[in-house]
Amino acid sequence: MARNLDAKCRQCRREGEKLFLKAEKCFTDKCAIERRSYAPGQHGQKSGARLSGFGQQLREKQKVRRIYGVLEKQFRKVYAEADRRKGQTGENLLQLLEGRLDNVAYRMGFGGSRAEARQVVRHGALKVNGRRVNIPSYLVKAGDVVELMDAPRGHLRIKAALEAAEGRGFPEWIQMDVKAGKGVFKAFPQRSDLPATINESLVVELYSR
Image 1 (cartoon, rainbow, N blue to C red):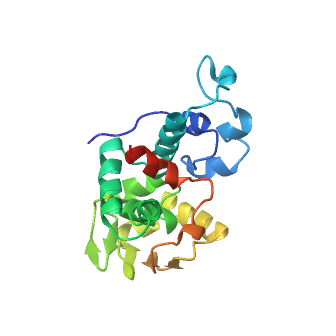
Image 2 (cartoon, rainbow, N blue to C red):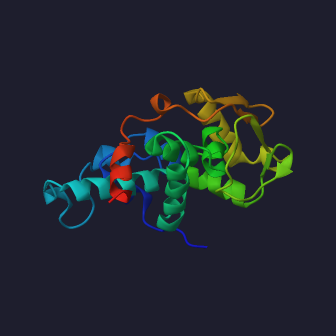
C-alpha cells in the first residue's frame, strides 16, 4: 500500500499554514508553523518568488491532498467522480473528501489526526450501520451511523482523541454520543461549513486544462 512518508510538519511549512496533521501538537506552541513559518529546505527563507497561475493551481491541489491525506491517483479518482456529479465540481470534490470514512472518523474524534483515524479504520475498529468496515476510502452516506467496536473503546489514545474533539466541539453535520463511541453523519457539509482557506476553484482549473 502506497503511503506519503514526508514529515508532516514540513508539509505544513511548505503550504505556509496549519494543515492539522499532527493531532494535539498543532494546537500548541510546538507547532512548526508557530516556530518556523517559512518553507522547509536550504532556501526556504528566500523562497518569496511569485507563483505563476499554474503554480498557484498546483500548490492548492497539493494542499488539499495533504489535508485529506490522499495520494495523487486516489485524488484524481475522487475528482473524476466530483466532475461526473451534478452541481459545482469544486464543492462536490470537498464533500466527497469529507465523506471518506477516515475523514468522518477524524471528525468524530476517533483519531487525533486524519492519519490516526485512518489507522483506526485500517485496524477494523469501526462499524458503519452495524457492519465492520476497514476501508479508509469508503464513502459514508447521509444518515449512516459510525461507531467503535467494543474493544477499541477502552484504548487510551482513542479516549484521549475523543475527549479533545469533544472539548473543541463537533461539526454541525456530525451528531456524536461520546460515551457510546457512536456518531451519525447527518449530511454532507455545505461549502460555507468548510475552511475558507481552501480555494477549490484553483483545483478545478488545474484539472480542466
